[in-house]
Image (cartoon, rainbow, N blue to C red; front, side, top):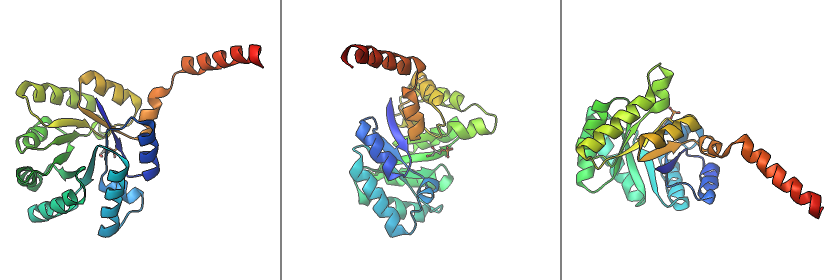
Length: 218
Ligand code: G3P
């Protein structure tokens, strides 16, 4: 399972990169706004910075909702850096734009996916990735993990090449369940990833090792 970091925060991207555990980054307009990145020039420069830090794919989302706007923006984003994957919402125009961009060798990540039908259309259009949102389904009393499990099953059944990115991950338990489900990628906030390190027996064991060493060595 690949790990993407779901943030536009440069400090967090640097931190995860230095740990050597991330395979890419996903962003969205809300995450960009959270970092105060505004204006097309600054937004494009920020995406480029992220690409220069990490080695893997970096998802950059279009703001346009009309077909012509989506493809123009998609081509601009893709031209920025070879690691850019154009993130496009699963609307009718979005699916059309994914088909067009795929035909031109531009990789896409179809986002805001909440059911298998949407994922199927994204895969048929040739999306490189599809992003089902776990946490937002849980928020409305549905079962986000159940969607992930269904998508893994369906995509395997038909041999779709589209990779599944489990998105809207909120905690370490989501990550572990994604591993068990056999998802291709989990895109996570940094604290959910570092949360995987936590175990009280690790802390207690380390303290005991160090105190035994101190007893003898001072
Ligand atoms: O990148 C999209 C996704 O991961 C959003 O997560 O927590 O805003 O639902 P969240």
